[in-house]
Length: 188
Image 1 (spheres, rainbow, N blue to C red):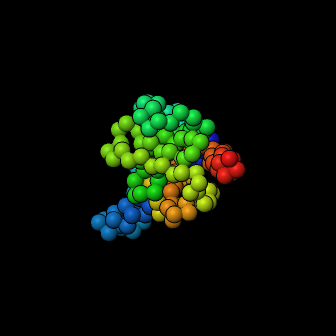
Image 2 (cartoon, helix red, strand yellow):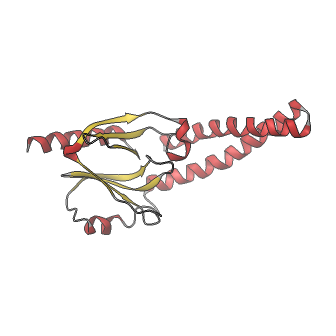
């Protein structure tokens, strides 16, 4: 919950400033009074950011609790013949311009992302463990506001030149589990 609040506060500050300044400039030009326009613009930006931040907090809580997004994963795993899942969690594929929510599963041979049941494009992402070159934590990127840029992400690069980013909880645990299973996979 602490991470959710920290992310929400960052989003509130960012949105307040961006929307407040833009609205302030627009109102200043419209009203021809610079101070009054900026004051009302910043107030409007703060109110809009408060509503947007509450919506974000609700989404993050639902995401963490696995409500609404996670219910179809067992049947999807069965359809893809996955028997042994070593580590799993709710995740977001953040590589494109929009977040795709679903589940991330670490199996004996691959890292598997399955989108949730409401996804428009239900493309499965499978990364074989033997192709993973580097796993690291990527920091915050405000330019990727709508694709998970307000949170650190799990960054995976493959030997084939592939690049993947996932928004997950406990990134350090994911990195440790992926690397230990990958190293065990090489030895076996």
